Length: 254
Length: 158
Ligand code: SF4
Ligand code: SF4
Ligand code: FES
Ligand code: FES
Image 1 (cartoon, chains in turn green, yellow):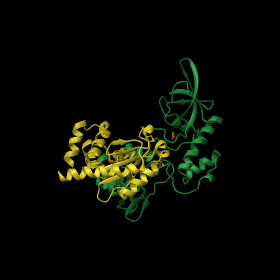
Image 2 (cartoon, chains in turn yellow, cyan):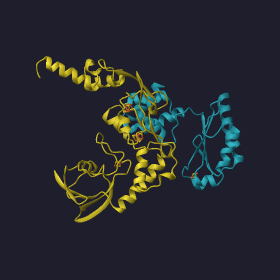
Image 3 (spheres, protein in one colour):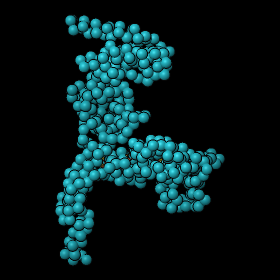
Image 4 (cartoon, rainbow over the protein chains, first blue to last red):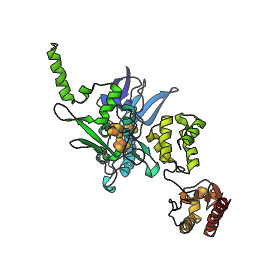
């Protein structure tokens, strides 16, 4: 653990950790969209800007940088709010809201930073192309169902080619991390649909209580990756806990 | 097609870093990137389809749709644009009876536009099957098309 200074306060932090995560852990809020602790930070949304003062070659230098992918280093001093920072975040938000005027989170932040959200029509896009869904699908789930498509004003995220996604397992991890909540997951009695990814899945219901557990493909994936036993997989977490508790009791462990 | 694709991959090796080179050769072979070929690349090189699709859609030189035997490209970059490129496109559209971006029904011609190919001084620029023609006027368009058709007819007769 080393000492760093954030907004005048000395904080104990782990060297090399994400500066943004360190700030958040210490109750210091820095606006951010594309950062998620489950994947490596890659600085896509540019919102988490801070000023870092560090010594290099005997001289102190201050620079504006994204905090999610900036490592905690000995002796750094960090400012998370200043006129300059706000001005720059405002610029970033202007771009984000022009791209995704419908995204609620972006509109909220824009309002907070005095960007005139009214100037952008509330229609169309909610995705800010941060790529978090792609990262999570690839690095956490090990699936790689998603990717960027095209570039420039035609850039998009999605599944490759035109038919139903072959790779997607319907785990909905992407939907749960999306900062603008623009990945819809529609569960019916026995299907789960992710229209954005053109994926329709069969839902498996808990053998005991009937609640949705996961999709068939997700369970098959778990079987491959964590080698979970069939009986356990088709039971929802709540019933699973009860099941194990009962088993433990029966065996006299409790 | 599988054999052709495998041969192309063999040329470079199945390293992910070679993906661009492999896709370029497939495009050169078929004039576009056929889906089965891309599926094969994914299988043999172990690169996800998402990654391949991103690369295939990132570079405008690639096409995922089947294209004609001959590719006519009109540069619509700023320099060519102000020197009358839109008129050239119109003329091509009229002669080939196809909209820019489209392919003729007989699969002979695809008409495309690009934004600056870096030869602005020669604008407006037309590229037919990889051959550059500078300072083009609409009157020359029909000659370019005729030349290609004639060459094809000869080839067919031989
Ligand atoms: S739901 Fe599909 S696209 Fe989303 S993370 Fe899971 S596998 Fe990937
Ligand atoms: S869908 Fe959501 S997570 Fe994916 S790129 Fe768009 S905003 Fe980011
Ligand atoms: S959270 Fe740091 S760049 Fe998006
Ligand atoms: S604008 Fe046509 S070559 Fe540059």
